[in-house]
Amino acid sequence: MKFYFLVVIFISTYLNASNIKLIDEKYANKMLGLTYHKECPVSLDELRIVNVKYLGFDNNIYLGDIIVHKDLAFEVFEIFKELFEISYAIKQIIPIEKYNGDDFASIEADNTSAFNCRKAEGSQKYSKHSYGKAIDLNPLENPYVYSNGTTSHEASQKYLIRKSNDDSIENKAVLTSSSKAVQIFKKYGWKWGGDWKNIKDYQHFQK
Image 1 (cartoon, rainbow, N blue to C red):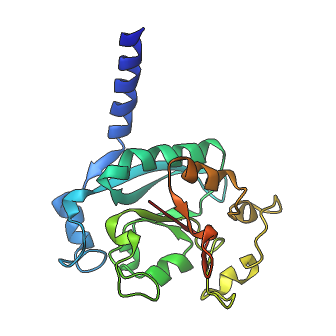
Image 2 (image 1 turned 45 degrees about the vertical axis):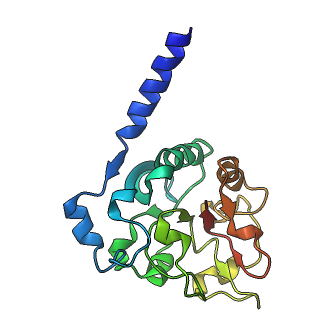
């Protein structure tokens, strides 16, 4: 019986490993000067590309790459596996290099992403994204909301009133404290920006 469990663990780890890749020289060149620079608090060796399966807003199945810290790579793979299993839909998952490291442009495209070496909103300190330890999930449906109740993205205005329902797949993507997706992240010890007091960052999960 003990041998059986060891074999199961080994197979599971092997399958997950096939979805997790190092940042090679070719990919590093895509990141340099956009999402990564020499002052970043982590090295490229500390990052991994995690290939995940997700349900799109059109109900089709896609694969996307998300870049995170190596210590969280297997965990992130499992989280997105669970999100897929509960049919939580995601607009798209593309590394933010496609948007030249521009967080605003990535959000406007409703893009789910993780690593981006940048300062935190309204701060001179590096964001958790700069360590590969934060993920923004469906950012238009789950906006960053300032303390005065406003948001910077016009398409997010209708989501300032938080209500998840079955009217559309986009409305199902709205994250609230009772959402299964939020509970999945929390199960793995991630903190949710929707729990913050003065501002709300509903898209944001960090560890």
